[in-house]
Length: 222
View 1 (cartoon, one colour):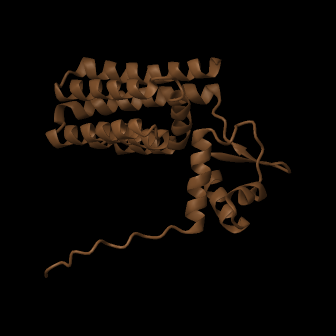
View 2 (view 1 turned 45 degrees about the vertical axis):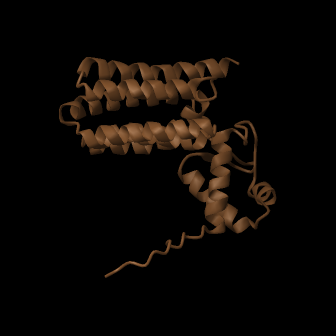
């Protein structure tokens, strides 16, 4: 059957979906301070909408762990403690080194090609200085490595700490030049993976994650 050359209709976002994205982006961009107490009424007024979509969006963000409820006061952005940062680093080092170990002997050219496509997308977001999209591509890069290695339980653990990792990652990107450094470090990982250099690829991943941790320290000292 011949297809008619008509562009498909894009799904129109609901008010709740728009509100959810606006609040989530504000959290990741630091537009809502972690010291700031907010309420559903304040959010509704700022977004010029009713409280119903705000309440629904807030419910999702609470479930995702990006916002926390403070009894009789309101809401505030989830703060990642030092202990949690250390645990996230430990989990990611362990999981992603294991992912590379399993992936390297069986990696395919198409998988390497897709990882390079992710880097190209990161370069585009760098030009637009779009940290939200950049960190999404960063998460896709790391998740794909574990997914390609068929370590699905480990991939689930990464997904479970996804939002906390994003909060940490956005803080790291606040360091001047960090986005450029991330791209270069990702390319080093891909090159070592493609060359099937087990020692180098694991070292590149370890150095990359440790530099991200160091970047957070630098930003927090300012």
